[in-house]
Picture (cartoon, rainbow, N blue to C red):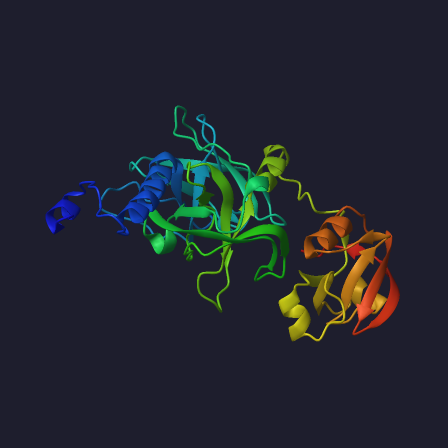
Length: 339
């Protein structure tokens, strides 16, 4: 029997046969190990208004205009956060979990991917390693670290809920191929790492659904790796010059096919067509299912964003569309992303 005293003291004991303790202990150990590995490299970012510096007085704390999270990924002080955390701010202060404070300089940012690269004027810092987001599976343990609502060094744990999601931010920017997790995120979590059971970064926490509970989104580490060279050069907004269709799509599943009375079971379901966009001009409508683009079969929403994103403004695409059983061929001349 495990006594209350043993539990309070944190002693690990053998559980009775058939008990729940071994499962709980294994989960706890995995989360604790991930936090111990990742925690030292997570920073609290305070962004101050233009022309106002943080107070250096020990008994006075100035109010920051924005607050978020980030993580160091090289010992010489490079760190990743969200672009929206640092956008439009002045001086940035990075606070490590051991209490050290450093000014942080923006090296590059890219609003389209909502990523920013910062540099601290210090070496020998704790740094996080990168995992492999291509090997993630729904149901896999995910641990989020950050500073929500100013509560420093906060940890939440959950699972990977889904992969390949698209999410439109409050500024109407569509971010695609992102991770959905039920690890609790709150304002201030933005820019913090989502890590696996080994404490390796698998994503950057970036957004939540405000009208739901435990639906959070993280930019996958594969996107971060791609963007680091761009951000090192200033972050020239990598998506400028990319084709833009102006449509929001979701992958057709048996559930949404039945709910929307679709006559097909695969494709990309059109959830929204933005007024004045290339999609609207081409005649796409809400409820249409895109089944192919330029002869390439479409089975997921992500395929649409990747094919369109590989094109340039002015390029023309031909889409096969199923509109409640009617087969259509639509042609769209792509515009440029306005975000």
